[in-house]
Image (tube, rainbow, N blue to C red; front, side, top):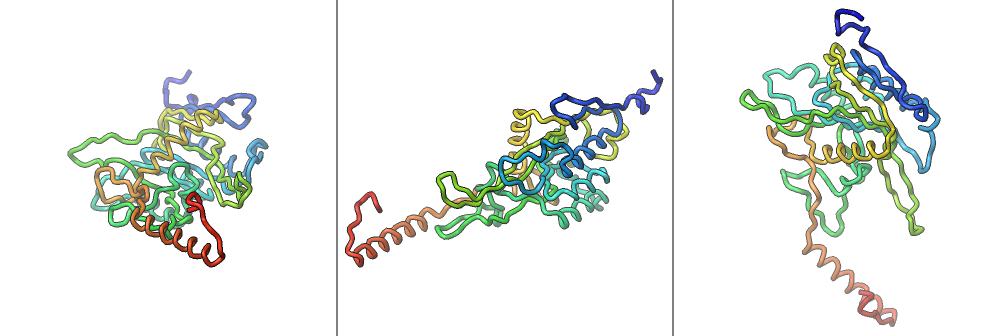
Amino acid sequence: MPDDPFSDDFSFSRPLGADEPGNRVFFGKNVLDGLIDGIDDFLHKRQPRWERRTHRIGAPVLLGCSPWITDEALLATIAKLPGACVILNKAPRRQRDPEALQKLRALNETTTGVALRALSGLAHKAPKIAGRPQVMGPYDSIDPDLRVPTFRTIGYRKTPNTQPPIAHAKLALLGDVCWTDEDPVGGVTDDIWFSPRRLWVSSANFTYGSRQSLEFGYWTEHAELMSAVQTFLVDLIGVSEELDAAADSPDPALADVEYDDVAMAEAAAESDQARIEMAEINGEELDDDEL
């Protein structure tokens, strides 16, 4: 046994479960290599079970969170994905932004993020307008092309006089965006949703500095755990903010849309009147329950 507990002799991995080949647990230094390799494995569907389809499969997507992300190799791997959304803590205010933050801004400009309507529970949210929820009239609809950027922030910003709580979990949930045009009652629809397939859990931050520390991380496909993590991450996205959020306190950029009840009622009355007039033209009578 070496005298130095931080030597490479303390770094190793082991397979996890014969029924889930490709999933491993990693210990020691450079644990992030296990995360990076696992993303690449899923992206290229290197296990036959990741090819199985019960619905029409779209793009592989990653949902994640970490207090910080600076590791160049991990950032390059995330940039290769068709979609991703990673929640980070707000960066402290500085006279000059660090290079890492500038790179995240650049990646947000060149990557596609994730479709908002694919995230269960967020389909009725939209970006605020002038700090207020969007108000929808009877002929309005939420833009189906709304997307959340690849990197988002959350919570409180650390200041010289505060030590706020942070989002400290380190999670990466990989899955597919599934879609269907078949309505359960036989009609035509256009539904998409995120289907989780494998999960990374670790002690390691998504930073280059974590590679020098003794950490652990593992891949799993435990269905109940993936479902719980999906709920957690989607909830975080729902209260997240832009990468350069102005507020030092939480100020979610998304909000449930509100509806103009008066306009809705007027539109309904107009529709009923139009049906009555059309029925009169056609010599028909409408029952009360048809209005």
